Length: 66
Image (tube, rainbow, N blue to C red; front, side, top):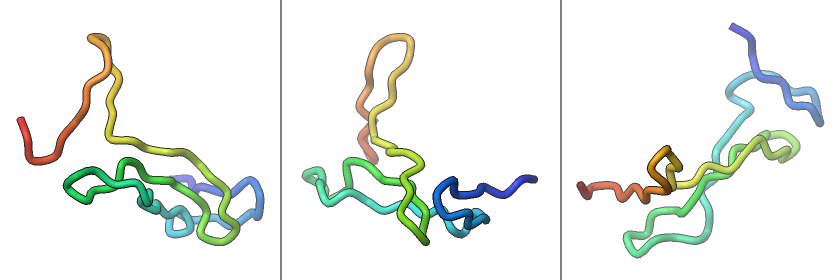
């Protein structure tokens, strides 16, 4: 399996990609999104939110609720 490699600093390995929770939080004190970035230089790979967009439109996923 190939290891991810940072395009900015050249560091490689899955352990160098970390996710940091946002400072913005829900009422339940859970982060609204996470930022996946390089641990060495801070290059941002992506932002992952609690929202899921599907064929039937956007859905809000609330943990612990059905």
